Length: 311
View 1: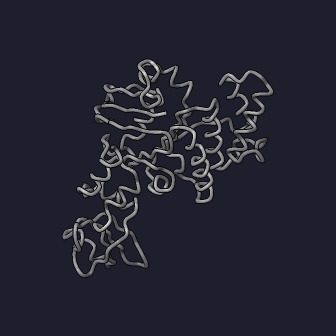
View 2: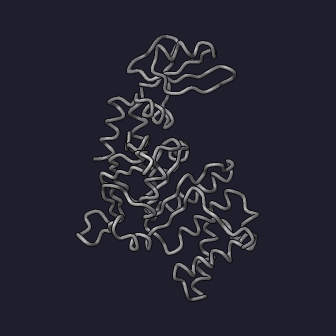
């Protein structure tokens, strides 16, 4: 399957331009949509999930090279989309006094699994896949945040969707629950188009073979993460400075990001060549890509990575 987004724009009634001529090609597998809060990620996810319509543009879901009529028009054929869509929003409600097994069974009925035996097999398989089988009879109100997220994925997988959307799924999870959830998403990505919308760079770095960075409703970069990292190699430099010296470094150099390290500040700067003997070459990572793009320092190297990913 393949999701094609063409010139999608959305402006809300209060004048906020949430999306500005968004163009993306999303193949089967894990695809990361990375950006800060308020960047337009949730608006795009809700639009793909048929919960709102764009002002302009088109979205189609189908196999590459599908004949006319075979691909699904996401904007105009909402019922067809919903039959093949699994959606885990950033926030979703559960009945706290009901067990996971009972509620998933209820959702399976709504999904069309009317045969009791078949439904029982489907519910068990999904609870096992989400690693919830041993706690299936516990009330959802007693689940941890990560357990609730895994239950949400089990619901989203009912019916075997070919398009799955997960919006900020690991926000607020502890490290162990985050690892469990990412492992589950990795398994799912082998069978469907899975869009992971997040502001957490590590999630995209660990899971996604392709990604886009969005801010203020615009796509700033679309690339393969490894290619984007490679394009920054030789352009990222690091230096430890005292806190009082940071302002001077920011005035003189194009700072990508800063972090505290042993009571001092580790600074990463963008430069085509060494910015000075006090700097050492840094091995870039996806966080450097993200912050350099957000700061407008992506340069020709990262643009080349984007062009390579799109070709």
